[in-house]
Amino acid sequence: MYKLKKLANNVQLITTPIVGTQTASLLVMVKVGSRQESGRLIGISHFIEHLMFKGTKRRPTTSDISKELDGVGAEFNAFTGKDYTGYYIKSDTKHLSLAIDILSDMLTASKFDPKEIEREKGVIVEEINMYEDNPIMHVEDLLENIMYSPHQLSVDIIGTRETVKGMSREDLVTFKERFYGGDNIVISLAGNFTDGHITEIENSFNFKTEHETVEIDRIFIDQESPRVSVSYKETEQTQLAMGFPAYSHTDERLPALSLLSLVLGGNMSSRLFISIRERSGLAYSIRSGLDVHEDIGALVIRAGLDKSRIDDAIKLILVELNKIKEGVTEDELAKAKECLFGRTAIDLEDSSSVSSWYATQHLMTGEVLTPAEKNAKISAVTLDDIVKVANDVINLNKLSLAIIGPFKDDEKFKNLLK
Image 1 (cartoon, rainbow, N blue to C red):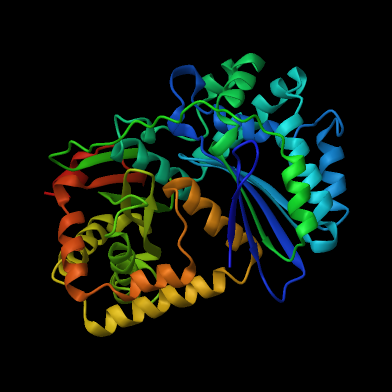
Image 2: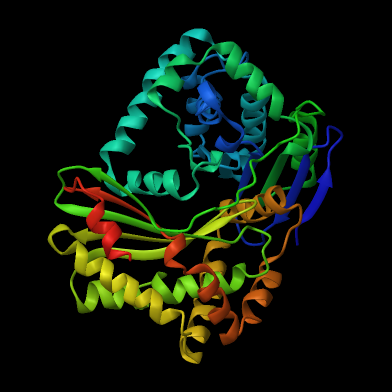
């Protein structure tokens, strides 16, 4: 069972012991992401994430940090999202004290060396190039650009070449100081640990007590017709991402939408997979899933399609979308529920997944549901609930479609959606 404790500096600490494991995962999440950025600072949260690995006073270089962690076989990384930034280390329990020391050192004493900042600008620009050269990854950015426009949620997390190159050390330090403090931070420890490790965390993460209030540009989608974005690229396969605005983290309809998405395209026995791949041979991969934020979400379909038969594929996807608005069968719903239960059980065998489970919920909603409590909400979903959310979310006038492939004209795709 997890425990939640507020530290002296208002940072929230969640501890979740796991029986039968020899590892522990330490995750620190900060409630700041690309949604808090604007203008020339777009991409700054992601930039700061990179710089946390570039040296501290006690560990002056990247190598000093990585050699210590590599030397004990630890896994470590970080991530930036629209709503938050996260940093984690997973290690053998006997090296957990080292993990606590290093992660706290990185997050509270990074140098932000001017030479490293200039060097890292080149690294991030190459990361941008990598995303843009990879249609599978880039098509999701294009979808968000149009689906959430004109709100800040539509902006790419990584920023642009221009914004990254233009950021100064003062910009980076000031932005970090605004948000890295107090109850804007959740520390989550899961796995095999002792009370002594908890004390070490309390004494090590010396974040400031206060932080700037995190404001979000709350979204209202004012859309009366489909939005289409086509990016020309000579590829052998066309990448498609299709989205409908949907529900936030706290919306009571989210469990029903999760089950709807699973029946629609969540696994290899789903309707889209059977129709588009198995029966028609139009795709190698096709799936649906949810993109969920603090105040909004989306039902998203992603596919890699035969470029010569893209019209056929889109038509079949629309057929399946219209069909599922009529409902799902009792058998489909029962299997979808068991699938979600099974996936949750498998995910939560890993201490890093457990630490993320509790930290993300607390940061985004202010409350935490245990796996059993979440499963109870899934169990309570009825066939009628599925019909209601399907008809609420799947509205072609609210659809956004992003395409990457050898196409220059978006009119043909707009016509397909009429």
